[in-house]
Length: 447
Image (cartoon, rainbow, N blue to C red; front, side):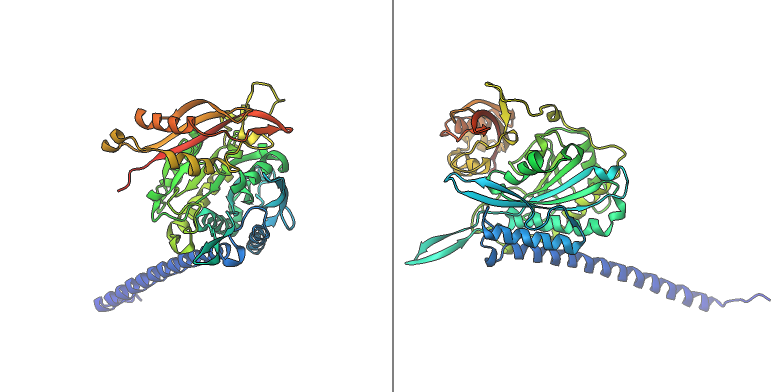
C-alpha cells in the first residue's frame, strides 16, 4: 500500500528542512566566531603578560628576562609541548662591553613528528622574547621609571608563536616531521640566542628544513600589511608561500626575496637553511616607550597563526626536506688572514656603539639620512640593501648596493654608511676578523 503526501505537507517539510539547514549553518558560523575570539583572547593575554610592569621591559640578562622565559616554559608545557631543556632553558652567557657576564636562555619546546624516520628532521618556529628593559628619567623634579614594554617588538611575535604551538599540538597527527618552537633570548644584544642555538647547542642543525621567524607582527590590520622575507631567492620557499597564499580564506602577504632587518633568522640563513621572516615592518614607536599593547592589532595576528599552520602542514609532510640555499657551502673554516666572515660565524659579532645592526640603523643611518629631493618629487621610495665589510680595526670598507631601488636613493644610502664612525670588530678566538654586514636602508615618503 503506497502512502501519498499532500502538496501542503510536502511544502511544510521543505520549509522546515530549509529552516534547520539555515539554523545549522548559523550555529557553525557562530562557533567559528567564538573560536576566533578565543584565539585573540589567548594572544592578548600572552602579550599583556610579557608587557606587564612586573617584567620591566624584559632586558637581556636581567631577572625580568628570566621571568619571561619562565612564562614561555609554563605556556609550552600547558599546551603539551615537550621542553628540550629544563628550567631555566638552554642557557648561555654574554660578556658585555663593560666586562660583566650576563646570563640568558632560549626556551625550546617540541612537537614530535609521527613518522619514524622524518621525526628526526625539524621545522623551527621562533620569536625573541627579550627587549630593552627600563631606565629612570628625571621628570618634574622626580625620578620616573621608563619601561620599554616592546609590545610589537617582540611580544607580538611570541604571542603568535605560542598560538601556532597550540594549533599545531591540536593537530599533531598531521606532522611527519618534528616542530621546534623557540623563544630566543638576547636578540637585542646581537641575536646571541639564535647564534648560540645554531652554532653551539643544537646538534642537528643540518636536519632543519625551514626556519620561520616572527619579529614585530602586531601593527598591521590586513594581509597587505604583512611582509615575508626569504633573505635570498629560493624557488621552493617562494612556491610554498604562493601555495599557502592561494588557499581559501588565507591572507595574501607581500613576499620579498631579500631581507629587511637583522633578526634571529639570520643565524639560520647563514648556514643555508631556508628562512621566512614575518613582520609588519618598523614604525615610529620602534624601540621607544610608546610601543605598548594598546596599539596592537590582534586580528591579523590570528590570520598569521593560521597562515603559519598551513606552512607547517606542507613542509612537515614533504617526502624530502626543502633544499638548502647556496649559503650552505660556506661552512666554517680555520681563520684565514684576509677571509671575510659572516656575523653568525664569529664568536663575538661586530657592533656599533655597543649595539647590533638595528642600533646602527636607528642611531646613525636613519638619523643622518637625507631624502634626495628629486627622488621625493618623483615619488620614488623603497628599501636599498647595502653590504659592507667591518675591517679588523673597526673601519668600514667595500661598500656595495646588493638591492637597488634608484640611483639617487642608492647613492644616499652609500653616502651615509660610508661616513660611519668605526665599529667594534668581530672576533674569533679573541682575534679580530673581517666581517660582512648587510643593512636595509628604507626610504619611505610620508602621506
